[in-house]
Image (cartoon, rainbow, N blue to C red; front, side, top):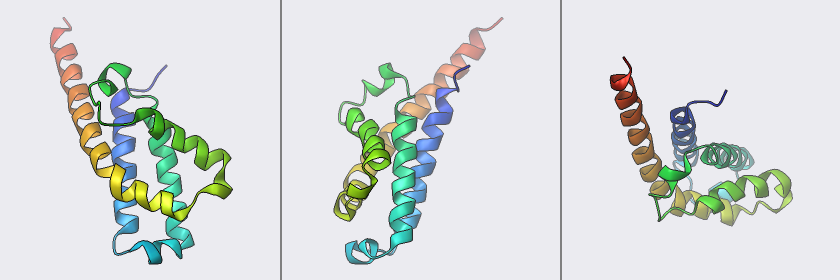
Length: 124
């Protein structure tokens, strides 16, 4: 049985919050030299990647500014090409891409909650 897509949205939002907390207080130079923080970011990006694949396509299609294929693809890069995970790419992803993704997934999560409420209201 497939998991409720709200859980996948929640996983993305939690992973983004983890990344925000993990990189707080870092600039690029301190991030680049902090092995643990880089690994935490990598793992949370993998979670985001996997969970993004499980969000409903019809809702992702409404979020046209988000490059969903790139989000899904970063997990493959981190998993299979781990030796190429360059700190610059990780840092830029955190600084440029996570805020718009967080906003989009928050909207998707709200829509999923509304749908659940409507479905519940329609059930006899």
